[in-house]
Image (cartoon, rainbow, N blue to C red):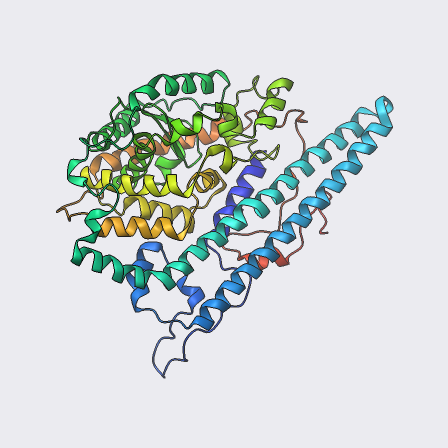
Length: 490
């Protein structure tokens, strides 16, 4: 499982940054002698959101070029997804055949042959899950991100002009939650105090079910994150005490529960580059609390169904395969072993909720004195350079789409400028240094820990891997043969 996790983490880290599966279209005239060739439209899509916001008003691409790019992105996405859907079906057929063979041979099969079959089944399950993750999560996320950037290039110039006009006419002052000078004294959603009990019960239930990773055992790091969280909270519309903890999980994520309960996972601390990025994430999650988003979700979903597929959770708990080894290992090791996937409908993630949290989060970071681009820079890093499998949950709960990027940029424009906005601090750098040995030790400790594979056969050779190397583009991933459990290409 460890080998599988490392492999897919490596593979998915590249899927979010590599070129789509088609030849780049020429978008401008050939350069004159001695001049540098202008970037094609497709090449522009590889740039960060922050840079594209600056460049978009000066870029010029025809409607034909834009449509060709859209068509190419769609064709590439469909072709790549279909390839791995076919792989998943192939593995399913092979699994059915092996299980049928195991059942027919019955109790008389020699132990060594039984074990061989168990290992083949186990590896095929992992490879099927890998194909499922590629087809249904990683590849779509990569192309959703590229489409959002294409929309930005095409639509942002007009949006930018409109934002400037709104500032000139002061129309921007009539936007929702424009009363930023009253942050802390205004009411975003009534009844925050009523959420404290529900949030505490949610935390207790998650811990009882083993769904909550343990807290990181480092008081200096916990204290640092608490101080950043409290600074943001004091400059927000939070009406309840803040309970913020760092969890010992390499997953790149953060989540908030009702009543002011906020959790930052170790992987996120490893991923952020400066304090403004961390503050931006905290501000965004606090906005979910002040707008009572999580409380609304929990009115119509249990904790189990909120975070996981209810039927799968029930099956695992009933078999005792998860509760006995600790559900939190599932978050890091066996998450895809049983085809588990967070359900956006169960999570209640909606564009409205995320748009609200984006706007409020930017305001809170601004009020706390931080560089307001922190959250969008972190989001871009996740989408462009750090799209590891550990951060797929980030994209499920923070899906990339054009409206979010534009509203965040508009809100940044509308906020009064602040001198000496905080980007980096010495305390942040000290936290990162203190985190390094903890991450190394955790990596060692995680090896050999239990996974979600309920009937795991110990000591099996790891499954063969896709022919995949760092920086390999999608066209190569989708054109090279997939290796089966026999180690031979299909």
